[in-house]
Every structure is written in C-alpha cells, then in structure tokens.
Length: 103
Image (cartoon, rainbow, N blue to C red; front, side, top):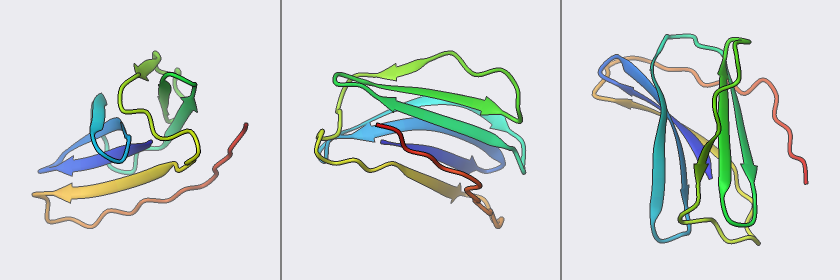
C-alpha cells in the first residue's frame, strides 16, 4: 500500500492506493496541492482494509479514507511512496523527514 503524488500538468494530486499483486485500487484524497507542500501521511493496515489519512502543513487531520479491496498479502509489509511528473516539464523533490512503523 502506498501514497501517490502526481503532478499532472501543474495540478498536484494525492492518492491512496493498494494492490494485491494482481489488481490495484486507488482513491483520490485531495487535489490542488501547492508546490513545496508539507504532508503528513498515515496508513493503518487492518485485517480487512487499510485506512488512510493525511494532514497538510500541521492542519487538521483528514477524514478517514478506507480501501477494503485488493488488500496486500498479510505476510508482505511494504509501504511505498511515489512521485510522478505526468505531462509536466518540471523537477520535483520528494523528501521523507521521518517515518515510523508500529505493529
């Protein structure tokens, strides 16, 4: 399961996505992020779903977004981040300042 940040011709979108090694499920979390946005991204894996949250620059935590299809195998614990400059001739920098895992 992972978060995607997509810069699509200047519109920066944040999505939550997961896949079971066959099919991907994705949900758009927010659109119109600003350049240099500070994001806090949270994913909580349950037995039957994954709950996603985000916060922009120390603001209010988003409402829960739950994806209950295409759950990754319980024996595989990968969390990934990706950044795409789709149709955008720009350089993007993606920095992870802190990351934690709790089981």
